[in-house]
Amino acid sequence: MVYPIVMYGDPVLKKKASPIEKGSIDIEQLSDDMFETMKAANGIGLAAPQIGKLVRLFVLDASPLEDEEIGDFRQTFVNPVIVEESGNEWKFEEGCLSIPGIREEVTRLEKLKIKYFDQEWVAHEEEFDGMLARIIQHEYDHLNGVLFTDYLSPFKKRILKGRLGNISKGKVDIDYRIKAPLKK
Ligand code: ZN
Image (cartoon, rainbow, N blue to C red):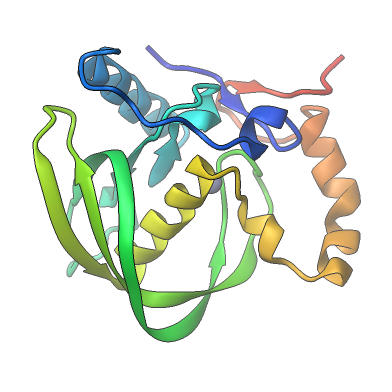
């Protein structure tokens, strides 16, 4: 099932998501639905709050990046905990399915170690760097109610205010299903 993606300005994107209790929800179904929703929007990462569900789960599919080194890495992260971030800071222009049409540079650390469960509740502890680490950091932020725009300077935010307002009203030029908080 393809869910509409919640747009910037919806309070659900600013809330902290709750951990998932084993067996409390059908994680495989939710994970499948999120991959389907993300694919329909040509995304590489999607967090549950972006479909209006305040649970700690995100999915990642690196195949649209067409990066030889990363390949077609695809994973569901349930109750993820970033235990360590390291390496140098690097800047990259990030985008977000909930903030279509806007891309801005965000500074993050290049490496991380993360613990999580997959959709079959198998525990993992892995290290990531570069692009995969960045996608994970971005999606992990969503579970804590943090958007990439929260890292921008007040000046940048002021410049983007009008466009962000339009996104909240659903005035966006995209071809995936959305749920905009201020749409009339
Ligand atoms: Zn995002």
